[in-house]
Length: 113
Length: 112
Image 1 (cartoon, each protein chain N blue to C red):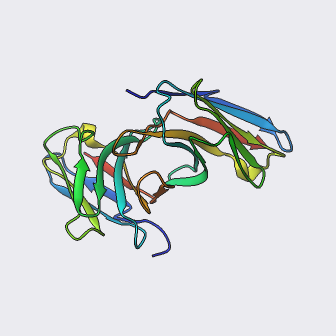
Image 2 (image 1 turned 120 degrees about the vertical axis):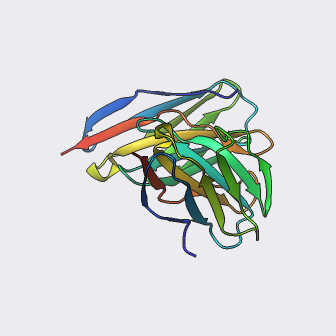
């Protein structure tokens, strides 16, 4: 595709619900990243994939967060038993390979009520 | 752990002015540094990427410099326009996962 695409753009979840956020990276991009951006803050790293391999998940805040990229293209970030503190914008980025320019999607704004 | 500071936090200038945004980072072992802009409610748009071996990079009215050893980068915007109003974020890339570390950004407003 022309750019990184994320869906849904907005998600409202009741506390305790599970949510799944989707990221379609730029075609052919090997590297894929997820970031979390709280209101008024810069994005913070969550996890990194090289093709289908999750090489770094050190930024995931708890074991309720899980990410996958089974075929090395589309990625899904899943949050189980959502809490109010999970409310944030979740950004996906892709790059052709390591150490090259990163391109971000529009993000998914998650609100937990 | 990499930490990024951006000064000033907010800036308001009249149209036509040249301006400089500052970024400092604590870990100089970076692969590169990217500058982004973020419009309200939107994702990040990449502006410039400077490799660690480079001193500066230019794109149109934008010029970014990098002093890796002192942990500093600046973004120079020439002849500012109202359309430049946005939050500007710098992000050095470090570590085996090439993760980007962001500051809280500089919120720029260019007035008519």
